[in-house]
Length: 412
Ligand SMILES: *[C@@H]1O[C@H](CO)[C@@H](O)[C@H](O)[C@H]1NC(C)=O
Ligand SMILES: *[C@@H]1O[C@H](CO)[C@@H](O)[C@H](O)[C@H]1NC(C)=O
Ligand SMILES: *[C@@H]1O[C@H](CO)[C@@H](O)[C@H](O)[C@H]1NC(C)=O
Ligand SMILES: *[C@@H]1O[C@H](CO)[C@@H](O)[C@H](O)[C@H]1NC(C)=O
Ligand SMILES: *[C@@H]1O[C@H](CO)[C@@H](O)[C@H](O)[C@H]1NC(C)=O
Ligand SMILES: *[C@@H]1O[C@H](CO)[C@@H](O)[C@H](O)[C@H]1NC(C)=O
Ligand SMILES: *[C@@H]1O[C@H](CO)[C@@H](O)[C@H](O)[C@H]1NC(C)=O
Image 1: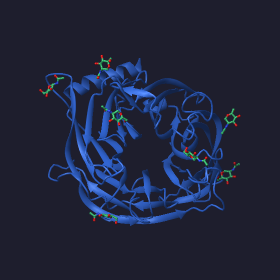
Image 2: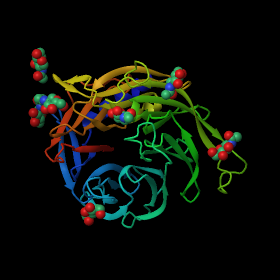
Image 3: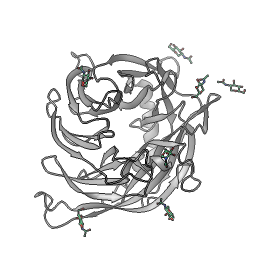
Image 4: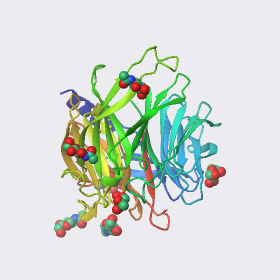
């Protein structure tokens, strides 16, 4: 009942609504500010470009927004260049007198950043895939980004997948719901690396939780019920075995109040679920289908993931990759499959659910031309409506191998 009310309010809001802003990054260089608008005389939406910039550098991979200052951060994976990476900051057009996507700063980083998160105010964590590292940035002055820390990882011997696990490849970085811990997902080393967040916003290394050998953890998401006593769960995509893992998160509070640095306690994981993203037994689709992005919506009641190169879905009579939606039982962490729906193109590297849950924007990285698709979604049932998209936006800008849109983000 509560959700029905929320979604009705959201829909009535949308009829009068002003445009919604979406940012998209392309591996071919640009980042775009797009506007999703609804025609006043009918129900049709359209997605149009407001501005773009090439200032992020050669291969933008990830975007993060700092709401408080209206600053957009862009990670440049720079994988077409040898051994470099960069991080840049841009003003957005929230202030009336400034135009959007003006470069504020641009700094060199470790090689190959692929995910960036704010884990504390003014603290941005970057996972460096090819560089085998994590770095921490102070963004207090978005015009002067300062590197505070970097962690470099090493392995004695290659993992089970010798080609793709010859060294550590940190692909994901995520903050837990308490804001006290950060987890780094290392696709090369098959580990979840854990950190405590110190009072000064620096990370303190805690340990490493090994996951199934060869599974290649890529991205993860936390889910926690509404009450303070609710259990916490962590869901992880195993990129190299096309799998989804569920962990119960266990906290321990050691002596001290967590303020001295010695009494921060710990975080660990108890695996209770594993399956192929095909839901047909562990290992199905392994080696051919590559899961990419994972997210929760409706306060963790629903979970969505994307799979690349499965071609299991159809969009307007053409084959498409897939978005898989699950219900989450927030008491037990149990997942139940809701529906497989089309991503609307090829290789959905990322997607983002709108704040009210009524839309999902999907970045189909290998569609030609580069393609961003916005689908309608029912926040009550968790079903994505892949009949006809609400809006589609394309760009001819692509790398020679066809790679285009790498990331999508709502600014609401
Ligand atoms: C809806 O209205 C807009 C603006 O008048 C128009 O451009 C668009 O073609 C219309 N769409 C449909 C499906 O009628
Ligand atoms: C930011 O740095 C990257 C990497 O050095 C570079 O490729 C890019 O051109 C820089 N952007 C600007 C606007 O100078
Ligand atoms: C998946 O779960 C099954 C059943 O609990 C277990 O036997 C198997 O070892 C698990 N596999 C992995 C890779 O975790
Ligand atoms: C609590 O967490 C810390 C840090 O991860 C760990 O060193 C310690 O062994 C844990 N204590 C217990 C009782 O699990
Ligand atoms: C490594 O993983 C990729 C992607 O899943 C797969 O295609 C390849 O066969 C794997 N290689 C080995 C040696 O397992
Ligand atoms: C899809 O194929 C069906 C059956 O061939 C046809 O009726 C329909 O118009 C097609 N739709 C599109 C969007 O091409
Ligand atoms: C159908 O999908 C394939 C694979 O994504 C793509 O190469 C092709 O251009 C698409 N065809 C149309 C008509 O969109």
